[in-house]
Image (cartoon, rainbow, N blue to C red):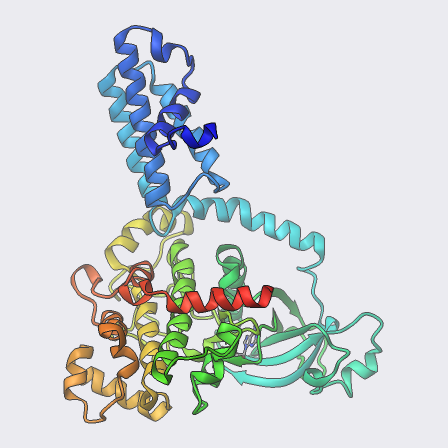
Length: 499
Ligand SMILES: Nc1ncnc2c1ncn2[C@@H]1O[C@H](COP(=O)(O)OP(=O)(O)OP(=O)(O)O)[C@@H](O)[C@H]1O
């Protein structure tokens, strides 16, 4: 009962009490002379500002493992400056604060250093211990060919079970992987083309990015299992050729679902775990599409937060898992703006159907990236001036239009839409007035046109300071996502599955 009567701790109370906690002599707070008391009040204020900054600007709350370290660092600085006169002290605290902000704003120089010098070696050590970095050609059986890009060929496959007879593995098992019960652990294998110009470099980049995203946003991307070099030439294997391996995340990508006339109802029970009852088809379509968009944009936010721009967001690069998660794949064209990795200013590696009009993540006149540590130090400036993440947001807008407007789903219709957009100077409102195709925009016009409004703010030209489009974080705050009927449906279906 007593705890009910006690006033709830406010953030100021918390800050004050924590400021006392870290004060060298807690008793001095109340009893020493008035200037000392003012000093401690300043401590409390600075501490409160710092805490608010951690929670509101960096979204780090007390449950975050970094929180105690950051507080400790802050209190150390406070301790060191305690003996200085008030002015000098505030000067040092302000400078430290500004440096701190610079190191923590996107793309996160500080976290980048932690990742590069701590997490990456740790991952390497753990993977080596568990045998993950020692994959061999004989660990896998290769099945059906799923696709081919400029630098690689993708196959479905499986991990060879222990005690499996080798001859059987190489011979009859081939191309039966998908329907063979003995292969329980299915994988996706990408053979990096041998003898194709730049393919090897591309394969190395893709591998590097997959390790990087497996640390930065594991829940948003296909699980990367590692790579191996073929040690002999046999069937699809060429001696010396590199293979990349992922966990098999799902039999179909978003494009496979969208190519079916029944979309989006063919994906409804996967995304929500059940069929939604009592809704008219337009409202139902809108909910399904909103949930897919929410997942895509949430994943984009996660990778953008760590400085990665995917650069090839399109339905074939979004795998749908059995549990209805939409995972990003194919990081071969990605750029890490934190360290300037795979960022080659005059190169466009992109699918023209989903690519924004500016064609490049950074202006072409941007010089080649300097060595990684220097690029990292400069990256917040580059990011704030150019907002490279908005590149992917345009592609997300095209996906929204395709999902919501049935007549834009075919390849030909998409090409036509893109040329009409170009004619309308990439202004979606103008396109709506000008197009002769009479698109069915009912799904986007629901709820006072919130979906339409979002689409117009994703599909747009860059404006002042290369802004003019919503970032992933801003898109998730758009009224379209605030009405969370799709989220409610997900929660309800989880509750009914748990019963
Ligand atoms: N981890 C995975 N789980 C399930 N399916 C996958 C996975 N990775 C890739 N695929 C499937 O393989 C297809 C091709 O993969 P990916 O896009 O990586 O290859 P690619 O050679 O770069 O092709 P493209 O250049 O056409 O994009 C995907 O569209 C997807 O359907």
